[in-house]
Length: 464
Image (spheres, rainbow, N blue to C red):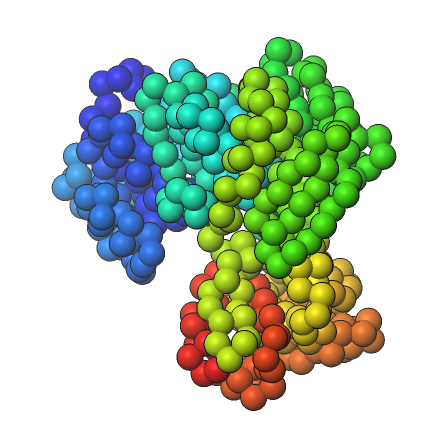
């Protein structure tokens, strides 16, 4: 396929985070972009409208006839049986996956920097993009969140050499079950800790490891892997490959060892091999994310002062311990955490940053893995850094049989046994009422969900 001749591109499932960002990149490249989705709503619908991208509400075969695309890109969540997928196959329209589109339109002529791992991808990608931007290297990027320094999840710089991309281990689409990051031509990889996740596509941890190994296998010999030494799995996978390996973390054998950590409100300071850095993040896990980008900067030839300035001016990521508001001395934070490890490190970060405050944890089991009982026991221990926890009802619980569904009553009982005062309150209005009644001045309320949680953050602030 001659991609230089493509003028009109149509995305099926355009309102997904990655798909909407790809649509923006394609638009910035000068292509005529349109697409479709169901239940179209802000913020992605707003972003697409502001970009001048037409979105058809609902999937219909006639949408393809109206759009007359040269190329169709189905999202990985779009299955066979979708009317538009069936139409494009029946009509033999040219189509590729989202991951292939990123590769062919944006990565072929760039140095691809892939940020991967179970945790920390979005934050590390955001810091890396800002590091290169601060050094005036004109980076392009595609990130599964919104870095506050940029205010958008994508950027296309035709003249820059580097493309920072968040490497997702989720599968590519109905036509290709390989993980997406295998397609990203990884030249430099930052590999954060690897754990079990995505129970909907990976039946066991061995299959997760194999997914990451598929990426490691395609990193060239003259490439580099910057890997967390604190994760035995990530380190073992990286060292099986053929590329230069540098390690970071708190582990004593790390090539770049983190030490001297200090916390003051939302600002963290640390040392890395004798150099001091400060960055606006919460939690030791984010110090590791920052350390990985320090190594990246050094490998790209940046000076210590350039790296130090970039970290010092990094302002965070939307939905990663994002302060949504404060009223009556009670602060409400929004965080994307939904895996037991992410919950634990997020709450530990809040505890370190606010040692004199009472820490609330309000959690919605919403991701496919968190709604299942595979993490039942781990969840009971992951809230230990909170003083008080509220567990909401399992999202769309009816779609899971009781045999595999998370049991919130048991979860709360076990959390109380582990020392965290915990409550199971299924309905959101009752959670809001409970917080408003019991929160006190100087409390920090950390709301955790990988979805909208029905706007509970604003509802709590209004009620307070």
